[in-house]
Amino acid sequence: MKLAAYRPSPLLVAAVVMGVSIFLLGGGIYDIFMEPLAILPIGSGRFLSYIPYRIHEQLLVGSIGVMILYALGALGLLLIYHSTKYIRNPRQVSLLSKIGVVLLLIAFASVEAVLFWILNFQA
Image (tube, rainbow, N blue to C red):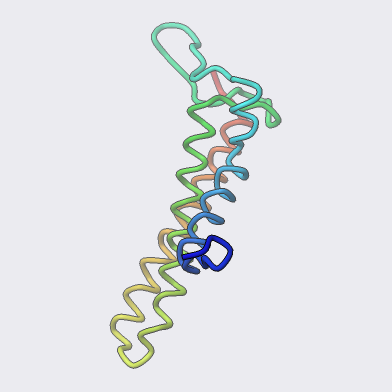
């Protein structure tokens, strides 16, 4: 088999593109080049996974958490898309669509909550 004639599967290409997108949107480049702290100690054995009032800076744990939430939202979108393949089975379409929407809403609400906590930190 010649290397020039090799065609990777579309599923593999989609998975790699999605993984790279989640990595970039979650701040992976920032994590690599800026080498942020893993977690922020605030005294008395308490820790924060974000830097209060600073939306343009991040900690490693917060970045990984956001990447996981983005992956959860992407999984929800994939389940919604996958449910369209079972149009002849309304029960399966309904179940997959509902699970996908719930995952998407959980991811969206969680990312919004993290942004709210960063901007409205209460000690």
